[in-house]
Length: 510
Ligand code: BES
Ligand code: ZN
Ligand code: ZN
Image 1 (cartoon, rainbow, N blue to C red):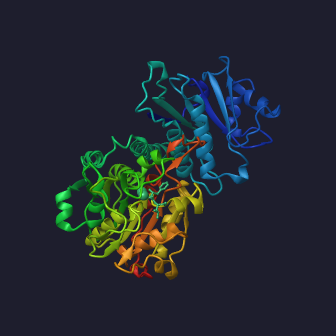
Image 2: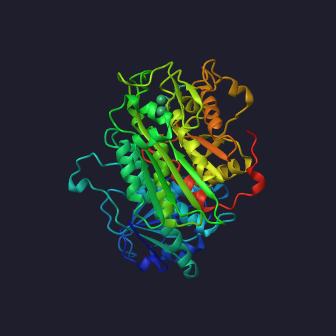
Image 3: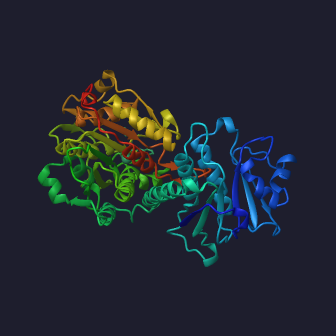
């Protein structure tokens, strides 16, 4: 979509619809809207006076202007109480408005941002939230639908009107950057929504190669032979039951420079998780085509970062394989050796994510990274604990956890910390191997994280369990049902806000 930013008087612009947001129960019309309101014969103030529009969050009303002004319609959307404004409410209102006009064949919809600054919210943040709300809400997964021409509902042009000329350049640049991020989120959502038989490990590896065509990005794919040479027993054993060859994607942006920190992002890339020999029940097994949402988030983040070009050294490690049952598959009770040399008693082949991540975490060490963050649809237990509104966060470094937490708040991909106390580690001790892959009935998200912690050891690390957040079952104001693309905005925010890790914070507890 093309987004233009203009500072002309909107009442004199021809547009199918002009979106305008209003706070709840305002005593009078904001002064910035006076001339538009007057020109339209008092339409907005009358609606407010008669309580036909109260400004409740996500309330919506579309009114024709009967040629009194150039815009053909006004679409009012409620922002809720002015004292309770948040970035996410801006996103929601923008998303609700954009969805209302989607599919209506409007050629030139627009929005008036008559105010871009609030008490503790900057012009940058307002603009970013508005554009995110619009672009994220319009995403629709139609890849597999046979659509008639009239069913294609894309909005190709959108104009943002602001009133202050002095911030025009700033707003334009925020719009550009937000578009880059939103496109990366759509890319990730497509991968996660796709059929598991299409989005295979090889397919994901090819997507990574595609991203590596951008200047400053390179990528290397480890084949099964490479993995055997290295001794990547985690991913190799998980892939044993599958007809699809596993791939280990290494993607790198920028190179190590003196003043750059090295951040590694790792994503679980199980392109279908049947459970393996510990076969999952049939109910909702179809969702397990999305067990590569962590992998897709890492690739999406690379797409965004390679265009935004922050000064950071970023490495993505993405182990990709299916987890399938077959005569050659990994069996419960098997003992395997991972890349680190540690042996693992595989009690349950459905706890496969941690096995492939163990290899990636060990591989990460060779870069001597300043921070490692992994994203994984790792445990159903995490969804039981936190529901669908927060990803589980675990980590060994307070400074890094703090950064991730703040980035999550800012973009509303929120995280909530769960503990990694010593007692939990006792639950994954094995009698016959160095460690076992399942810790028993309780605290499953935590014991899974403890397992990972044993492989990253002292490197600053955060693990995000996104099993509850990778998907929404119902439409929300700016995310339609299906894959959310969680992780892309969080990681991009984190990386863009990155300041060099202080040496003192690199000392960890475990
Ligand atoms: N991919 C699943 C976890 C999952 C469940 C993700 C639901 C998204 C939604 C993972 O590989 C798994 O099967 N975990 C098991 C672990 C158990 C066998 C210890 C789980 O959480 O039940
Ligand atoms: Zn599993
Ligand atoms: Zn899984």
